[in-house]
Every structure is written in structure tokens, then in C-alpha cells.
Length: 117
Image: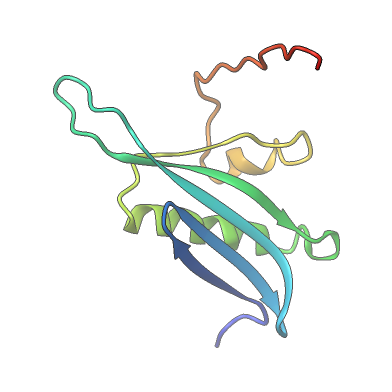
């Protein structure tokens, strides 16, 4: 028997979109941007995915829907043969992603200064 909610997805070019609906009403979503990795010596170029805009409306959090959504995203990434998924979790979601197998990585960032106009 299908769950009382369901996940719909579509692909548009480099993007994959995932929508969680209950009775036709959107309650959550995620999107994945596909990037082409640079080839390196001894390794062919492959794609990887950046996961963004993941959310479940507050009334539906902690019900398993977010986990099911991300499991769907991971399965899609596997089917698409993405080398890995990367994301930047919000402080609220920090405990969520390690439960799904996401691990802190070696990514470093810098917000460059912007000149005032």
C-alpha cells in the first residue's frame, strides 16, 4: 500500500527536483544540481550533485518524510551514477544528515569581500 504522502520528481537539464505532496498539496522539496567533475590523472570525469533547498513543512517534520525524501534523492543519485552528493546543512538540520550517512567533508569556503557601489 502506498504511503499517505508521495514523492514526485522531474529532471530538467542539470537539475533534479523532488516534491513531497499530501493530497496534491506540497509539503516539502529538495533539488539537486549536477556538476561535471574535472578529470584527473587515472580517473575519468564524473558528475556529482549538490543538494539544496531541502525542507519539510514544520507540521510534517519528525514523521519520517524527510528521511524518505532524502533516501529518494540518494537512490536517484545512484541511478544517475553521481560520484557523490554534497550539501550545506542549516544549523537546524545538522543532526539529520549524519543519520542518513552524510559525513563532514574537507570543503572550505570563503565569501569574497564586495566593493560598495
